[in-house]
Image (cartoon, rainbow, N blue to C red; front, side):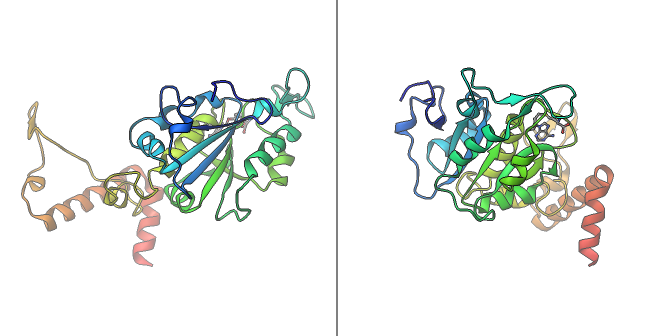
Length: 269
Ligand code: SAH
């Protein structure tokens, strides 16, 4: 295994390590492990932060797999061109549909066509905002394909032809889809069984029941005159649960009127 992606197929599998490509052959791939295929002009950005801590360990242990497909190697001509000027004029460049489609068909190999079993996502500021429910849905699939845009984005026809689902990280514009893909994958992979040591921790945290999480404290009991709320040290689990819920509700009502209204509607409904 060399560090250079082969131009002929433009595909790398990646494991978590400082020299991930060298270690490829040593990385176990558990049969049927959840797999992310990322189509990008910058495969060297992966696994990046996903190679650290719990997601990184899980990657190393083969609980999930990450493959990058290098868009550049599907470009046309001597310079492997991947973009061109926007039809109708205007600033910037648009990623060509033929190039993107070739890279996506490489990603298709060995994947089920049913989007519930294998979501195909284009990271895009025009997409539906990504939520915890999406992360749970993606984690339940067998894997997913992520297309990272650059420049002004990709030609509309390839989004439609490939039936890509557009997902946004939020109401802001990034220069590329890679950071969005990292965030989406981190949120998704941590929901795969075995990735987090303590499975219960995903059930109690922010968004899982439609509320923001209660505040957290740890030792020391008194830090610069600020003490841990007494109830948390009482050992009374019922009281603690009630206090946490009340805090979560107050925080959600104050900070996220949208979540709060939805929570009340569900509770009353
Ligand atoms: N001209 C586009 C923005 C292109 S930004 C527009 O106005 O809608 C370049 C690439 O960055 C996009 O193709 C997309 O893949 C990625 N990107 C930018 N902002 C994003 C966001 N909020 N969520 C997900 N991906 C984003």
